[in-house]
Length: 212
Image (spheres, rainbow, N blue to C red):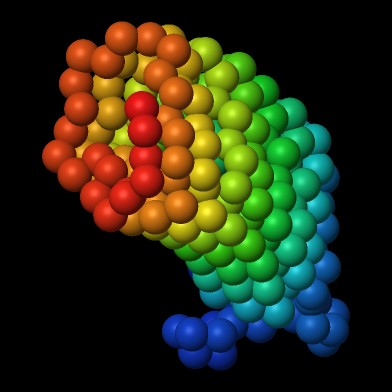
């Protein structure tokens, strides 16, 4: 088979799932190179996994594929990946960094929501849109580089990023949607390289020190 099917792991309960291979608990997961697609929720809530290696040849990561893997520290995403689904890495509390390939064109809704240890991220030049809540509650995020290929940023995209101090929006972005930076209470500077045509509701809610 070339796909890892949805819900392919043993469910001990809805909170904590353990994955076994040959009667051995899996903490470091290497996806077989015969796999082309990791389907929705395939490893959701596998809280014992600390490392995931995805080989070149896998083309997509499904919705919620690794969401709730709260001990996941490292994930290798190859250049063959063209789509990372909604909520794919949501709630991976211990994920500190991730390299996004320049083969993806969008960062889907809530992909990194609640990744509380993520400190920095670089958006590849191939990406044109950042989805709703994509980095919401990434409370350790201090640095993000947004390429000038990005034209849209969704609502709540960076809300509750409590360590974020400065961000530059490229000239290609002319709208700031509702609540985009809400509750980023350390945010000091938002530099807009282009002209803004729209600023939504409560974009900077509780951002007491921000200047634009």
